[in-house]
Length: 449
Ligand SMILES: [Fe+2]
Image 1: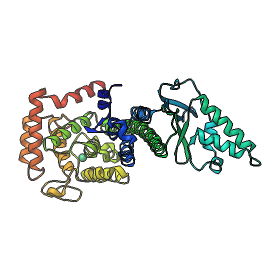
Image 2: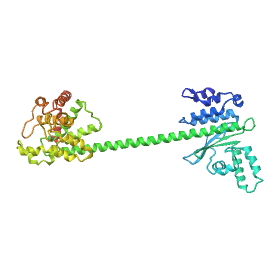
Image 3: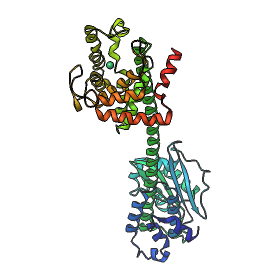
Image 4: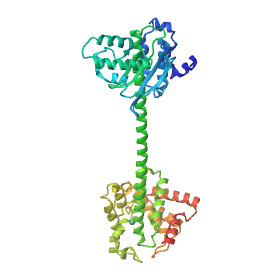
């Protein structure tokens, strides 16, 4: 790889990577020890743990060692967790090891040696330097009960010779062997100095940290992806539950009006006109507020389910006693829903849908802003629909007449602000979709009834 390519690869965040300073430094400078190894290594370590893809850095580290320490080859063996074995991920130099050819499992002498605490009894350092190993084997040969360890050392020596490694440096993570850095003999055939070994040891440990950091990052990404998938599924199920829930509400609301063929279809129109009015008023039509308004519009007369049919369907005006019974539907509807946790607001809105703006309504005679805005909206659209619809006892009147009536009652029966918002929304929709747009569903419903 050319120096230009190295410069490109090592330019992290627009700044010169610390390793680049080492690579770029003349070999003589390193050999003269005028470069502060510890300072460079400390900078490298800080940069490594921030990297998300350490493969490139690992390759550069092996290249750096290969060039600056001048060895016949540099190879990095790391633990592959998924297959529970060690694999060579990089090898550089004249006598490099072909990647993938050598399989190394936990029974391999080198792995066994570095995973066994017994080694500390015979070596004060964690690494193995081949000349040190040979000296130690010779020394142990004169001591009793050392046959087993000498046999193991002999296997380690043969393994190192087979891999043409003079120096093997382990790296650990939380006490577990993570990898081995293998270095061939120095091209100069001189011995490794303590400073060179220390330098390589830190790089080996930093490589391990970079790999572990990347693994941890990948693990986090996988967990995040799984979490996002679960959130999407939860949202989908909640939406499905929500849709089903409102289908049930609509069916229930429809059943109330099914008792009276003249009001069949009323529920859809009241809901549509109510939502339209709320939108015109700038009402928050997102999330739970929308659901509350929608449910209130659909179920505002649910209490009529408890009103006798002879009163509900009487083809004439109600007498005073019957009217008193009819008026109880607001309270009855609220009581049916107020025990349900998600319907407390809906129950209160339903209770107030026959209250009047001037306080002359029922059941409590509250007035003005004390009446929930949703109840004031229901009052207006319900009245409008009653005026324009044909009933058994009255013929439907024109839209213009209904608008005039609503305005006339503004400030007394109705909230004028709601009336104006309703008329504004109604006119806009009539221009867009035609005069009878609000009766479209009624016609459809009647034809299928
Ligand atoms: Fe009502």
